[in-house]
Image 1 (spheres, rainbow, N blue to C red):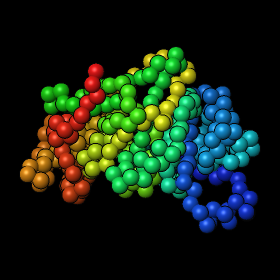
Image 2: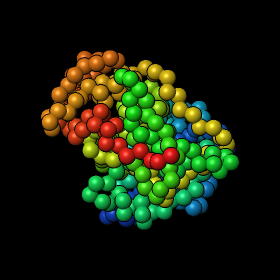
Image 3: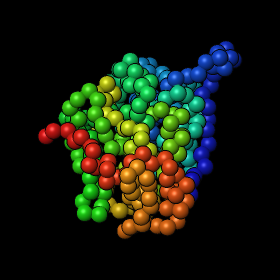
Image 4: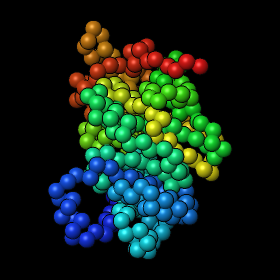
Length: 301
């Protein structure tokens, strides 16, 4: 069930508000409150001084005083949940609130190492533009993390393969930990993240797979990079979580034969999800997961 959240908007003078009526802001930054309060304040200090694009903080009640923090950061909008939100809830809320062309998701326990806007914007404006561009990710000792994922089946189970990004732009099955630059309108047309799935891995896997099956790529580009300054190891929890059958049903129930889509129920699929989520949107599937695996060009070792 979706949590309700409260929004405390940034403080603006009347001149700023009038100017915004005549132009659409192109970029919002969403900072997910995932570290300590000191981490959050340090992150806000950096962004306010270096990258003050429509800043948002997504957090929960009792983490801090919104009034006090907004007094210190008047240009920040706070999205506050009653209890710890999932990754899906965080990103969906940001997309609903920010009202910009693009939004960038960050975490308070990371630093933005690179954001080269011109090549990122150019790729986002191409006809076959991605739903999201995810970053190169580095750990606290500045080692690059293998965050490229390729679709792969291990028997009847989806088991993505991992690779190290090496090129300026590469295909990726899903955005690692949801971090990335999103096309807001496309994100919402795709219905965002599935909040009925638990676990960041399954939520991102579901979103990225849905993007690809609907014909929209997910990319990783070197022009965007983040550093986890306090973590050496970044490991996904791939154990089965509540709602993972929703992903399986949406990803594996559709089969494409000679250009036509058919539904076939298999293990870990539910009729309810197929009837409510898949069947009404079967015409949106441009491929099936088997074909996605066969055609994927995995990086060379």
